[in-house]
Length: 526
Image (cartoon, rainbow, N blue to C red):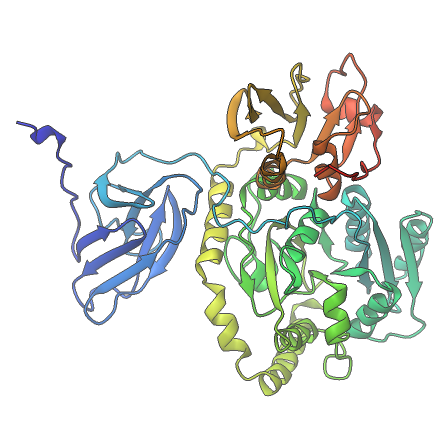
């Protein structure tokens, strides 16, 4: 009588024989020796390859939802983009057992914050932490100019920039750096003779004094929020020694495809890609046994414990940061990928591909001798679940990209009468009875009960929302101390005072606005 309530059967294609889902683990069975791998496609994008054992059994565990949503659409394939192993996709619910057929056109469009996000601990004053960005320079003047221009455009907070010319032979470098030296935020140092990349990086670390250090290659291009994201990732845990950005072209830190050059979506530039990953890549920050000096944040306490890079063993680079990371790991520290920080990288601009390969082999020989488990440890972590999720979210983001609908900065407004600007996303924080609500385009994205006698729970919720939802500015129409302003100040989110009536665009309002100093924390504040 109620047969229509029963789920229709899932039709599989040989050699796949069975599929089961217990809410956390996917189990597939195929004819033994028929498949070397099974490609899992989630919501229309490749997620992972899993290998059946000798009995044809393959498993994949999902500790949390990759999309941040309650369910996903799964399609197993023979190979990535190869023949489907099921007649239709199937829907799986995270935390809910059982598979159900889904429409061939079914797709989960949403990408939400991750349940496993690694947030900056509540109340950490990341904005007050001094950072020095060290840029070793050797030739490649056009790329150096692009790098420094991007740094000036996108570096916020208490950061200094030190560019060190390692006796470049390119005659365009000296006048270029002289022009940038006139900028109050850039200090230029020069070597009379070429000392090599590692010695140049070490000089920058020494010049930084007690500050944290970002080692940034001169052939990179940063985008919005890059330093804020690195700071938060590096200080999300006391045991973290370094945090490295992701890139289009940085070996193990390339996304979404490892060890490959990854072209940006058509019509996108670095700024668009950086903002898209800031909002959608997630904050899972996978662990790796190493960082990458193309854009690597080094905490001062780790530098104090480990020391600088080994100039004697790695004079031209290519291994010095890996060795440093292993030394830090031997002291119980670890290293993370700043999932939501995208930095573009030309790679090999100073040395060229051939010399880079030679230097890379020489550096690896030293690493193998000093750290015999290094390559095995890297290999074991490159395909961690957290890394699979990161790559998949970038893949989804690029697949959804449209040149005419690039991601917009998210500005926060507190209360009603929010400005209506088309060039940004205006998010609202409002009180609705006894609830605080965060809204995007009129939709409640998150909510929390307000308790005036014990407001800390609400402050903690807001602290998480600001990070999870990638808020870039707090916009206010009057100078007023508030818990929101205090938390934004701690998180290095600029608080901008704008005039009323509002300008026609956010760009005009922010250009004419006033950047307010951080709101001091007083007794009784968050």
